[in-house]
Length: 212
Length: 212
DNA sequence: TAGATTGTTAATCGATTAACAATC
DNA sequence: TAGATTGTTAATCGATTAACAATC
Image (cartoon, rainbow over all chains, first blue to last red; front, top):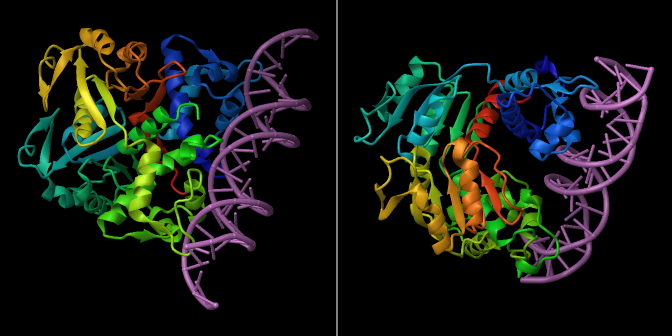
């Protein structure tokens, strides 16, 4: 349906979709089955007009005089994001951050963590809910033998680019990067960064320039 | 200098500053002392025009016919972000993610982690480089007795809002939130979110809609 | 039906890019 | 000086908001 839209939807819109989904889930858990853009505006802090514009990039999910069905819209937004699909995921780097991410992924349905790699001998062989941490040297072979959709990089800065190269050569569709650098990936691979420092520094700026 | 600028600088600009800083640090480490906006454009993927516009929100740091001095600009950008200041930081929630964040903070100069709180009896009393994890019940008292600038929330969703309330009542200037919800904070408090799910879902979208 | 609220077009606003005079 | 590159103004582009006809 929304897959053959002519025009590319802007990243600003895409980055608001998870927020809509989150709000809708919250409404659902409160037993609310119907919501207007006006009310959703109050909840999210975005304008009603923007919400309607955003959603209409993908289809007319509402009904005049009524609003939106919460459960239906929740499913639609999930579908747009691709959360009704399955992803095979590999994690490289099992330090504190890697462990946190691995743990976080455990209860994300659709994102199936199939292997974890590290170079630290103290970590290799340890287990996380049935997944044994493998020696990093086995990554290339694993990539050849398995179809991996998403590679997560939670290594330190110095090895991140070479890990990224291996994952890309191994055919990943996307990289979720936690290392504090700007990776270079082939055009065909999608890169999503979680730069903790960028976030912290932005916070510092606004602490010192509040309201300015 | 840049503190009495009349007009508020847009968030888009602020969020690019850490990237500039990162690139400048990289240049510095390669022994490069001078850079033009054109060359910086090549490195960052942003346009030269945008880089000059961005920097000129805060002052004229360059020199016609020459470019920018890398070391000087690096310091200027750090100063704008407030990285020449000290921040007293408290962490609430010492699960996987909290531990990862605490560990990450250890080598961030200027951000001084002074206390860690959790409710889990198995975690209370454990130590991280000299900081003993305290019982969460002591948070209010700690806030009364110490000036805390930044509160980090790495608890689960269900307790995040009440933890946030405590931190705000305790006088924090900013909240760095890792819990997957939209906190409500007083106007005077700055909120910065790290929503892992939002990031992962965005990645999923682009994996399925590459180039679209 | 009358009231409510969407979907969508038009207007506004803000951010990015282009151009170029100033100047090192 | 001549060449290079900034700082800044003007032009363009894109995103947000406002308005309202369509319609449930």
